[in-house]
Amino acid sequence: MEFDTEDLVSHSTDVLVIGSGIAGLTAALTASGERTVALVTKARIQETNTWYAQGGIAGAVGEADSVELHLADTLVVGQGLCDEDVVRAVVGEAGDALGDLVSMGVPFDRDAGGQRVALAREGGHSLPRVLHSGDSTGAAVQDTLSAILRRAEGVEVFEERFLIDLLTADDRCVGALVFNPDTHLPEVFWADAVVLATGGCGQVFRVTTNPAIATGDGVAAAWRAGAQIADLEFVQFHPTALDNASSPKFLITEALRGEGAYLLDCAEERFMLGVHPLAELAPRDVVSREIEKVMARCERPNVWLDARHLGAEYLKARFPMIWEKCRESGFDLAADLIPVAPAAHYMIGGVRVDIDGRSSLPGLYASGESTASGLHGANRLASNSLLEGLVFSRRIARALLKDAIVPRPSRVTSGDEHRAPAFATLGVRDLIQDTMSNHVGMTRSEDSLARAASVLDGLSGLLGTEFSEASDLELQNLVTMATLIARAAWMRTESRGTHSRIDYPKRDDAAWAGHLLWMRGADPHFEPITHRGGR
Ligand SMILES: Cc1cc2nc3c(=O)[nH]c(=O)nc-3n(C[C@H](O)[C@H](O)[C@H](O)COP(=O)(O)OP(=O)(O)OC[C@H]3O[C@@H](n4cnc5c(N)ncnc54)[C@H](O)[C@@H]3O)c2cc1C
Image 1 (cartoon, rainbow, N blue to C red):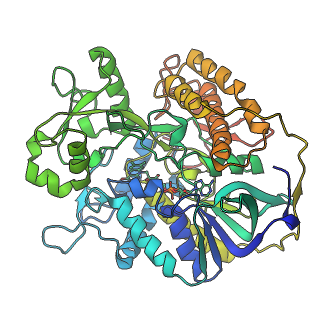
Image 2 (image 1 turned 45 degrees about the vertical axis):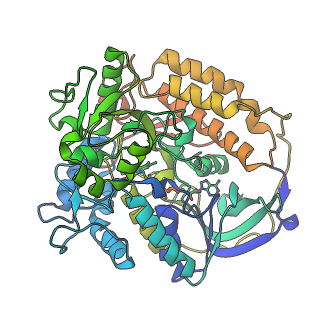
């Protein structure tokens, strides 16, 4: 976009946090003691993926549990691509971080005696380890942290402000260009450090559990600014979204299977028995792919979730939101089989960060779902993502105290030399979503990825057009994210974790034990695993 910061309304802060989910709120709160903080978010503060999280947050806090067991479960699910040092740092800090959430007032459920937090079991975990607040854990965390943030000193919150681009000068991030819908103009936020906490991009797919805000804006902006990104081919599909007409799809948490619900095929038989020792609680990639096979065999758009044997009283008390949502959709959780199908759920890749959340671009930090931190490898262990945002943002706040502060420039300008002719945007969002769901979904092939590439190439003119509406800026980010995901998926000629190629059905450690790293202006670069955790 063409601009001169001297012509724009400008704000100045020590730390600029972009995003108000668990990663953004935690970064703002922990940094605020020492620095001034501005938090910018594109919708109302609670409109985040975090708010929709149901199952909970993993942490080895139970008597029978240990950091070593949580580490081992995370590495197994990550299929050779986790960074063991990162996993150890995150699961090792979980106890303290979760203890702080309890002290801040997050109402986690407690056991019958009320002495300890209650722990649920989810897919891939070898024992109950997930702290939860009914089936609305994300909302409990979001509401508690947002309320504290609004009272915090030294923090200014800017809702309904859209990150357009990161501002760079001398190969350093020095702030951001943010769209103000009230004035219809961009504004500049100068900062010593920018923390990107903009979440994922489920909205590139037609069938997703992610709310409308999840358009990958932050990762696309980081890419444009020259930060390194990684692992975009790994997109996690959740096995059990309610199969009705709504969009986004309503998730039915894995914790329901953790409490004993079954998955049934069209003959009402349990099909996960014999597929994996953990049956319905196998890692998500295994369950989602098996569901896809059963749907094809049964020629149906869904399989069935059976929770009837758990009883109405228990289900209503433990899963009140799911109970209500099923009722609204015409299903009685205690009497009916519930139609479920996989949906795009979580972006494993993103801005590549080190163990303290620093990106490759000095001055830019990132936390949460917008990152490729090395925690998840090729597949995310259930309930490790809220934990990732929580722990990484605390680490960033500590890193900010150590990292040098560099004088900021007084002016940044950008010309319009790349501007392309106007591009009609009607129907483009649908086209991207259909293309990605049809061709870059749970199973991919050379052929399907080539089809996706040809549609996305046709949309590349949109990237050079200068838009001034947030919805059009989102579209540009969706095209960028879809193109990067499709290209990475095309390059990785193996199947591993969430990435499954029908033409390369096996995991290929000889060729692919490593990460695809990218920077704008250069070809993707394969970096073999150098860290521990590659098993
Ligand atoms: C239905 C559902 C259930 C889930 N259940 C669980 C669970 O039980 N446990 C678990 O660990 N994980 C769960 N997840 C995943 C988890 O919720 C997310 O990975 C996590 O909340 C991401 O947190 P975040 O802070 O990184 O991003 P988010 O919470 O998504 O926040 C992103 C923020 O960035 C803002 N933003 C984005 N773009 C811009 C822009 N251009 N300008 C300004 N602001 C912008 C958004 O408005 C938002 O405030 C679930 C996800 C979904 C969708």
